[in-house]
Amino acid sequence: MTSYLELSNITKTYGHFTALENVSLSVDKGEFVTFLGPSGSGKTTTLMIIAGFEKATGGTVKVGGLSISELAPHQRNIGIVFQNYALFPHRSAVENVYFPLQMRGVSRAKGMKQAEDMLSLVGLKGFGHRHPKELSGGQQQRVALARALVFEPSLLLLDEPLGALDKNLREQMQIEIKRIQRSLGVTTIFVTHDQSEAMSMSDRIVVFERGRIEQAAAPLDIYHRPQTSFVASFIGESNLIPATICCAGNKTAKSLALGSVDYAGADNVLLDGQEVTLLIRPEHIKLSRNPVDGRRNAFMTVETIVNYGDNALVIGRAGDIPLRVRVLGADVVIIKEGEECCVSWTPDSVFVITK
Ligand SMILES: Nc1ncnc2c1ncn2[C@@H]1O[C@H](COP(=O)(O)OP(=O)(O)O)[C@@H](O)[C@H]1O
Ligand SMILES: [Mg+2]
Image 1 (cartoon, protein in one colour):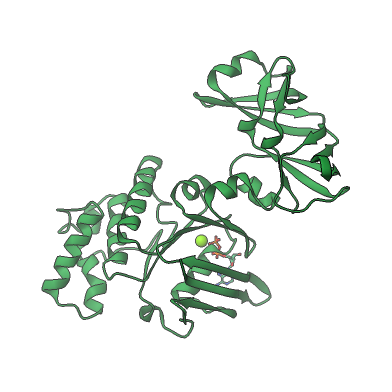
Image 2: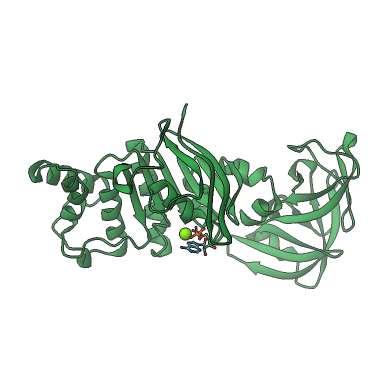
């Protein structure tokens, strides 16, 4: 596939403050890319620069090989949905969706038909005559989505579009947006600060932190092979253990709290004596009364058990290292807060992070 949207060294400063620093990214045609990161990390600013509502201080934006940096927003053929991108209150749903077509000179007869079809696609057949105040929050966002898609944009930008919705509706809309995006094949950038939303919806996740891209990769790569401690801690729960590579040839690291720890592999070349961080996900640690043969074992003092019904999070310490262990509901009864237990894992659940 050829890259369709190309951001090259985008920088944005406000006075002395650098909001974006050398952001470079290639997005394929039809790809669903999610920008994920904490509040203030530069996600919206990047989206605004793509849409043309903000001007980059440096760098270029290309779509289909052509620079769009000099084009006004309405010339860019981009569909946008924001969290609070209000519908026109005095227009019915179908007239809201017709609006961008009207702006493009499409006749009312033809445009209203297209708008009705688009409302059907987003699951609002028969709701076209209603005004925004007669629609629920989720229905209003569907209308906004239809309005962003009806003119067949070359790009769809969604900035936290589900932020105002409650959990059930949110999950339903996540599935719907994915379905609609697939059926139209429209290249999409979706912004969220919700990691599970990013994991479940995306072809690729771009993790932002302090105006920089920390990592851009497929969801499972981001989860299993995070390139920085920030990515490891931002996505999923993680145990991050400081260690020193003691014998790269034997794939062994040494940690003050856990002693010598074998790892299966790493994405970078490792050198003896190198300071690293070991990642072990909580669900890869096994909790037991006694050491388990064939696994690396350590002792943990249990401090807190948080029950979630089908699973529980056991929080404790091994030496001075805090550890989190995810156990299935039935297994947690073997242990109580304040007790000491064994934790064990295998080398292939240890991932070495060098940054
Ligand atoms: N108009 C502005 N003037 C000054 N600073 C701004 C402006 N717009 C955004 N910023 C700053 O740029 C940073 C990135 O903001 P933003 O892209 O909105 O973050 P996100 O969408 O990831 O939460 C923030 O620190 C924000 O305060
Ligand atoms: Mg934002």
